[in-house]
Amino acid sequence: MPRPPMPLGTYGKIKVNEVTPGRFRARCKYRHYDGKVYQVQRDAGSETAAVNRLKEAIRDWVTPAQAGTFGPDSRFRDVALGWLAEFERDAGRGFNSWGSVDTYRNRLTLIVLPEIGELRAREIATSPVVLDQVCQKTRDRMSASSAKIVKSVIGNVCMFGVRVGAFETNPARDIGRIESKKARNRPQRPRALTTSEVLELFGKLDTDDKAVAADLPDLVRFFLATGERTGEALAADWRDFDPDAGELTMAGNVIRATGKGRIVNRGKTDNAERPIPLPRWCVTMLVDRHELLGRPTSGPIFPSTTGTIREATNVRNRAWNPFKQRAGFEWVTFRTFRKTVATLLDDAGLTARQIADILGHAHPSMTQDVYMGRQAASRDGANALDATLGKR
Image (tube, rainbow, N blue to C red):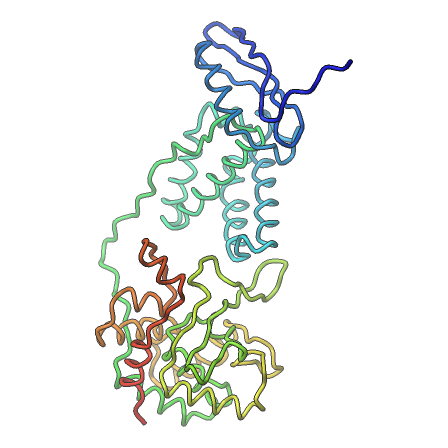
């Protein structure tokens, strides 16, 4: 009669031997919940510590993503590319943003791998300071923001390496803080348009034939009614517009991802998809526009000449930049409109939380999470913009 298999989630007899003077190895067979039996081993400076580490490994066991492919002798490059492939698969299933995939791939291939790609996992495990050196060097050569992205990439690769057996523990845990360089001069504060400047801008847009042909007057009004990012405004769809409720649901933003072309990214937070109450003057503008375009049931509200979603770079470089030079608003960018909305709402007495909800910023707390979960958007912002900019 054959010996019955070990019950799922249990392990066999633990054997300990001294592999080198003062270095002990504990090992045993472990039957995971996938039905497979794995040989697990951990080393430490004493028998007790080795056994404890072995039990912790079994407790936290994750089936290797590519069993047998990675180990302590694997090069960091191979482990990193394995992580990147998994990250891309998750993006394809909607768990990650394709914009994040592009950003992480860029930092990995241009910064991290040229520095430490050929090191083996065991070499990094015994000298994890090399990971910190990559981050600090990136900060000194480029910026603190780039260094923080590099730190995130390295941390994710190392966590993946623990899962697939390249590392016993995460060597990225000891990477130091990324301190920003002290600016010699205080940076200039972002400037917002005043109410009179907004009305002057509207007047110049409406009387500029090239701006009208490029569909800028309505687009700029939309920016100043919603405070949306450029990609979010260009992704706005007629099916998300409710004229009776005076709302537009923001459902994503337009990005261009490597190998994917132009896509609509649905965002990474619950607050990325949210209803935005609109000022009455914006509702009127959209209703008139809807009628002029033949009452489409869906499709971009601000389409290209071929009816597709417009490219942000084309709108900015071919239409907006030439206009602002002609109109004397050289300092105004699309980001200025977002700053302007936040300033006008703040002047109108809205709370920081109300403004954050309109702009799609998430600063979670228990109350805020519940509020955003209900998607209960206040009309105070729309009313404030209506009172401030609803002048003819």
